[in-house]
Image: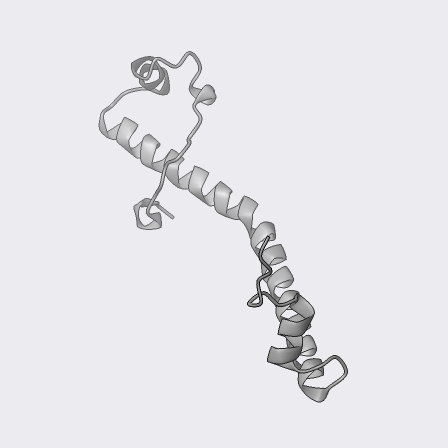
Amino acid sequence: MQERNDIMSVDAMMDERYGKVGTPEREAFRKAAIEQVQLELASTAEREQARPKVKEAYAYCVGQIISDARKREKITQQELAQLGRICNPTAIEYKHLQCDFADCKS
């Protein structure tokens, strides 16, 4: 097997790009990297915290669109369920639906 000279260790790459461990350049990089990771973790936690509210908003919006369309066509929930061949209207799952919040009523 032929040895490759163009491959370097991660340590060597870090030393080349950000300075050797203990130097001011490497310390500045380390601090910036830690700050970036902390920001990413914080924004991920915020997104995860907001996710149920977003899902609830989508569900409400889709429900309003369906309700408005049903009322416009003057059919009951049961009739709509029969048209959709759904036994129980509450069994409907709203998968892969997108909605424009401008369509929602306040």
